[in-house]
Image 1 (cartoon, rainbow, N blue to C red):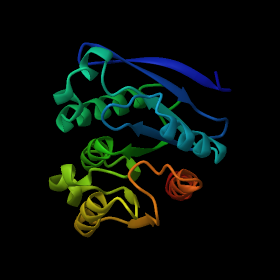
Image 2 (spheres, one colour; image 1 turned 30 degrees about the horizontal axis):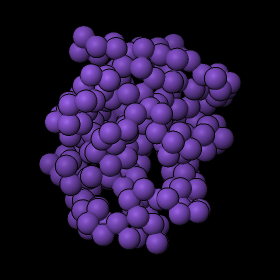
Image 3 (cartoon, helix red, strand yellow; image 1 turned 135 degrees about the vertical axis):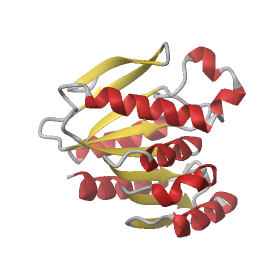
Amino acid sequence: MAQGETLVSIPVDGVELEGELIVPSGAEGLVVFAHGSGSSRHSPRNNFVAETLRGRGLGTLLFDLLTEAEDRDREARFDIDLLTERLLAVTDWLRGQDATVDLHVGYFGSSTGAAGALRAAARREDVDAVVSRGGRVDMAAESLGDVTGATLFIVGGDDAQVLEWNREAYEALDCEKDLSVVEGAGHLFEEPGQLEAVANAAADWFAEHLG
């Protein structure tokens, strides 16, 4: 268990969502991770990014958007309304915890989780920053104009369809924003150095907007 790590069980909609909350000493910001379909709080990519963020003094919460039983239902994995409500409920929970009540909050969303993150951010003015990695931002199209937190889209240059969706969504944003294209990267940023580029870009963005 990492220093300062707390295993949490968050009550939402009659179920318990398991997670790991880490808040470094002196942290002013906390990043909530919303994983993609078929993934979980154990996502190696999200955990890599989270470790980088903590190195910059940011708190992190990695949690399961779905229970194990729900995750076996393919429809639930792509139920963006459900994922959004879960993320909103977890943010409410954080606002009720002594260790996190006063922290600036940001969302890091991957794939379908990014759609949930953007939809949730559109409904909360206290979400100060959003970062999307390879995000299915097209699934949040109707909410993009209501996002107020500074938003960064990170997309692989070889992830052609997702890049097109991100460019279209970027134009629809009416907030501080940026689009970062990692050249040569596919949807999973698997080649050497690519995930590091994602993590560093996210860390820079959150450090600036959650500090």
